[in-house]
Each structure stands twice: as structure tokens, then as C-alpha cells.
Image (cartoon, rainbow over all chains, first blue to last red; front, side, top):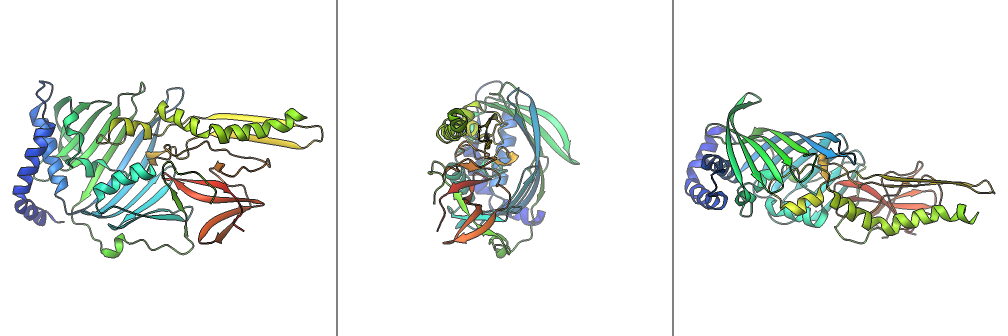
Length: 258
Length: 155
């Protein structure tokens, strides 16, 4: 989506935005002095903006720490590319040091494809991306990458859990001027860099898991394209020659023996 | 001799029977960075990947000089996550993964991460199998990881 179109969408949905941000503010705001209202407002504005995007492409480079038995942290990297048409189309590729996966969702079915092995599985899916994320997590123990992008500002997001909120100040991420905010809630400290100006997009996210002594971190940087090119076929999985359909095991399902 | 013969079987059985327990213990152990601030805390922590490796190598050479190697390696099926990609998952349904290096009886339901060499892909009844000698495996996605489950021959 180009910036002009984007502005049009924003103008058109200003009432919706206002109502949404009112609701979100009420949820997220805390009376504690440790909570800077400006930081909460920035987060709510970002959430509302994300919730009102109609389509986007985002590339993300992530790092995630794993804690070894001896307490040592090992960092893994992944690259993720998302093409999204809200509320119910997704084409995602994720490649890490360990594997490559393609995820395709068309509002009816969800397919996971493993390129190297040539395996894919298709399962029925709920009607929206937001529900898809929950369903995959609960039923198949699959966590969509970048899930926060769909969760900020959604009805059940965890904004209300924020215990501390701080505006750290201006900061540049990949040449983009951002404002850097830090938040604390149960189990995690986290930081987000939000683009300044009329497109309040998250440009970087750092999550520190505080329940682990080693305090492992997950980091993600985002490169946004608000005018992605795609067509309806983009969200339809066509098995490549030689690809084979396999089972996607449901959580708790008896293993093996079919 | 009895001991030499039984040990691999015992290990295989232990891997089979203790699998879910091991997986549970691993989940409680935590171990990875959370990749979302918006998921419910406990659920998310439980889903984070970790590496727990208990490698048991029992090497038994019996009097008939039949050499049995049995390796039982407990790992998360998918150690990554999006951190490690992917997505990390796999823990919730992960049973113990046995990497069977040799030829003790393949127990149906045993999961392995990698196949032995010389396997053939066979389609039967619309299902993908890997036939490796007399042992049949069914590839499955568990979380975002790929595992192979020993199954009965489809025909």
C-alpha cells in the first residue's frame, strides 16, 4: 500500500481508530508512576495502526537464544518474509540455520511445506489470521513467527499486563528514525522501536525472558512494504513436483501407527 | 548373555515408555527465549524449545559376537522455534526420540529424526511412507519439525 492510500485508509477509519485506541488505552494503562503514559500511548497508536493495515509485506531478521543445560546461551538466526492480506490471507517463508518452512493460509486451509524434505501438510483453518495463530499454537504446537504483529491491539492482547513503561528516547534502526520504548511485564522485559511520524510501525523488537536465569533474548528487526504485490494465487498452495503430503500431528494425538 | 541381549531392549522400552515423561520434564525445564510478548505466559514458556540431551550408549558384545549398538538420544523434535526457527515447537507433542543405530527390533511408535540409509519412498493408500529394509516409517510434522514414526507395514 502506498503512503497516500495509507493515509486515505487512516482518514476513513479515524472513528474506528479512535474507538479502538480508547479501548486499548483503558486496557493498557496503569496508574503506577513507573508507567509512562506517553509510552503506553505510543504502543497503543502502533497497535491501532497495525490493526488497520489492509495488506503488508514484512521481512524480519530474528535472533533467538537457547539456553543450554550448562547455562550457556546459543544464538540462532532466522529470516522471515510475510505477505499478508488482512484478515485472512498469508504467505510466509521462514528459513533458519535448521530448516526452511513455507506457510500458506487462504482463510480456509493452512499448509506447511518443508522445502528440503519436500513434505507438506494441509489442515482446515479458522477464518481469520488472528484465530489461525491461536489454533496452530493450541492444536499443532506451531507458533507462527512474528505473531506479535497480529496480537498487538487485538482484543485479548497483553497490554494490560504492562507493569513498567519507559520512553528511552530517539533511536535509529536501519536508517529509520524511531522512538525507543522499554516495557516490563510478568516473565518478560521487552523493548520496541517505533517509527516516528505518521507510520508508527514497529522497526525492532527485543524480548528478554526474565524467568530464566540466563535471561535469553529474542530480537527481530522489521522491514516494511505497505504496497505489496500479490494475487489470489499467491495464497494458494500448489505442491511442487515430487512434493509429498504427510500428516501434521495434533497435540496429544496418539503417535504413530497408521 | 542375557544381560547383553536385554540391555538394548530395555533401553528401547525405556525410550518408548519414558518418552512422554521426558518431554514433560523438558517442558518444565524451559530454556529458550520467548518470541512473543503477547502470548499467555505459562503456555508460551512451556512451548519454548530447549535442548536436553541424555545420550545412553549401551554397547554389548555377546558371546556369539553379534554386535548390538543401541543409542537412545532424547532431544526435542524441533529444537528451534522461530528462534531456532521455527519455530520451536514440537515440544508439546514431543516424545523421546530414539536414534537407532543398528538393528534391534524397531518398536512401532518409535520416533526418529533421521532415517537410516537406503530407504525408499512408498505411497500406499494416499499416505507417504519410507521403507528402510523391513522397517516402515511414516514422516510427520510435529510442530514445525519433521520426524519419522515407526509404523506397521501398510501391506
